[in-house]
Image (cartoon, rainbow, N blue to C red; front, side, top):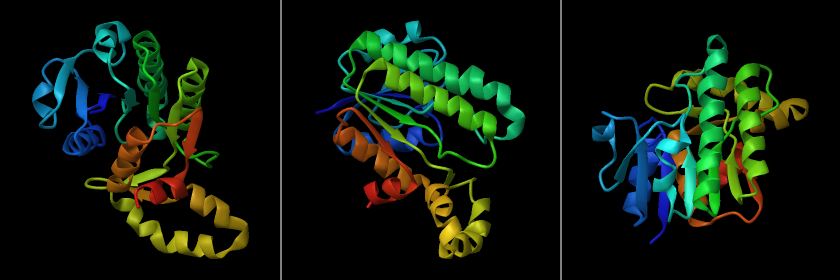
Length: 215
């Protein structure tokens, strides 16, 4: 039975991944802020701590083969540039520090597809977080979606006809694939596959690879 530590375990993607991994027979240790433990998926071991302070949870990471980091600002927008650094980047650095301290053998991180024509601050923060993951020396899987569709995140469906057009044009096909849309279910399945098949070195999954990993 694999033991997995998940930060952001009560969030949009983390709650779904926690449930999926528990259903697959993994032991899941899920990080939550004090008072949020009740939002934890059934079958998970709750760990109370602060994602912005590795000292509050790093000892609970010991014995886990994989750490999956899913903390981030909800509904990213250009207006949240400062939060991308104070929350997304800062929490990633803390998670890396906790993983190194605990001797984790595999780190899973959700970055963002790049280069991209918009959301410069968000892309920059996620790229710096990727660099911290690489610098740790821990084998890692980095997933790079662009926009994740799901409940409460459906407006980009209106862009599907545009994506089809861009995909049909040779000069824009690569960008259309790299900045394509994935569903939250595809992300959960790709993350679960990454946990079950740890990387050797650093493995990067762009949108096409995320779709393929999800089957």
